[in-house]
Image (cartoon, rainbow, N blue to C red):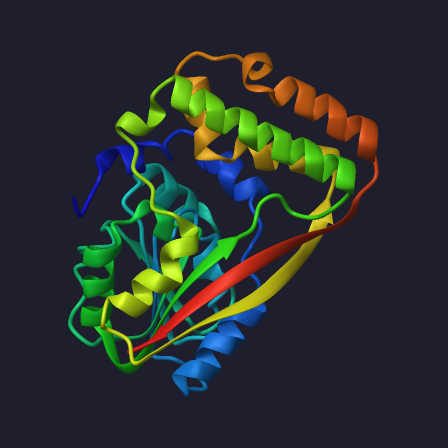
Length: 269
């Protein structure tokens, strides 16, 4: 299986929530990857599974051209609705998926995949990535550890909600159609593919404003919760009502720094 339509439709219907509440990947990741590519200004960066463009727009001013490849029409529309950021970077989005980008051989200096590689069949994806990368080009997956860190009681509530959602997914057979691959296997899959001469894992982080409303919106930006809502479960049944109440009791109206920790898995072609 190189392409699973259920993995794409899972992300339909909540692009605005996703775009509003998800964090923007840390800028230091672009600096590190550019340094690894040994190019001050990459000619072309390809963002696989670009979603609403959160991970695509960070390359404006850091690459000459950026192409977001995204199979979800909802997500692409949200990305294209953003004003074009100021700068000389050419930024655009295309319909396509990780095993069929439609791009020419050896065209990219860097291919990134932020918060999406676990929804992609790794063998076919890595073959396509290797095809479109130039010799010496860089592939990287960027994945956030959940939950973000803000307050131990809020973090515990987020973790409890996550476990409840996973149980409900299994009860309602969500994974009879949706397919995901373990994030902890990303580096091993990149290494075992044979397409890359060097692989590495680096930890980076991002700090953004956090609040009770932001945490609740962040929870609602997960496809797992949206799937359960689409099945007809209420927010109370899922645990959102309890989570919202708990984080409001803990944080009140405060805005605190929220720390997002990321794992950057890198392959050098």
